[in-house]
Amino acid sequence: MIFLDSASTTPLHPEVLKTYVYILENYFANSDALYDYALKSSSLMEQSREQIANMLKVKDDEIFFTSGASESNNMLIKGISFAYQHKGKHLITSAVEHSSVMGAFKQLEEFFGFEVTYLPVNSKGVVECERLRQALRPDTILVSIMSINNEVGSVNDLKALSKIVKTYSHAFFHSDCTQSLAKMEIPMECLDAASFSAHKIYGCKGSGFLYKKAPIQLLPLINGGQQEEGLRGGTSNHPCNIVLAKTLRLALEKMEEHRQKVAVLNDLLRRELNRMDDIVINSPEDASPYILNFSCTCMTSEIMLNALNERQIYVSAQSTCHSKTRSVSPVLLAMGIDQKRASQAIRISFSYLNTEEEVHEFIRNLKEILHEYRIK
Image (cartoon, rainbow, N blue to C red; front, side, top):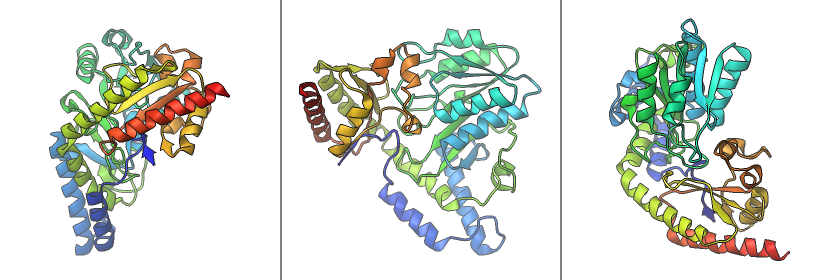
């Protein structure tokens, strides 16, 4: 098996698994109960929150545990919109956001009377500062632009975009940083809020967190309890929340080492793909090394995915959240790539667990599949 879909998910780190099992076996009590056994669970969870905050250089009361980035995105986008709609109902995002962001904005637009500006991206898949500046209005209350695009790896300049927001408006600036966490330095000081997920960095699925500056008010989407300062009612998933600090620490400790290894794999694959006649690379040169998107101009994504799957090589055509639809990638279309080429796209996403041998094996199989398809 060759797994090249790490932007979708990653395996659980052995040390995280070991600690997770230990917590499940030894600290199963509800962390909101008041007896000593439960208070230990609560204490461990708060230690995790504090450690995460320290690693990100923010305050511990600015970290909120969630089920992942999709919930964090919805919690922040809708929570701010509802809490601050008295100041304005204009929102800004980009045309290439993750489906959880796009879905939240579409719902606010269609059912709650908000006006949303969807910023275009350039041919590299990034939002240009001047486009953002022109879109800002006195009634803009929120701007949400992702850090790294999950389909092509384009990297937005969050520092520059934040400066535009803060210079020309009173809006809050949020970023979906799911694909950035432990892969690049995130300018937390420039963000009012950011969303993160654990299973992209070798942590538990159904686990993540939201960073939100303390003064910002949110209208809670889940009522029912005191958990997470009243913003997320319901019994806390304290085992996942407790091991999230270890997950992040392990990932950050090896961030540069892993990035350098993945960059070598990305460069190797790019060189090999550039030598092939029927391949066009869609990811920009300065994209995140963790993601490489290309099109096979002689066959559709579906055919290529099936052929690779038969050989136990696992990749994606676009975001996993869109994987069961037959529509082509809106990200590639927004970058100016035509419909046919977009329908032929394949996304490779690397992990530090991948090897050069796997890249060579992937290329060998890719060439065989293309050759077999041509001669049929």
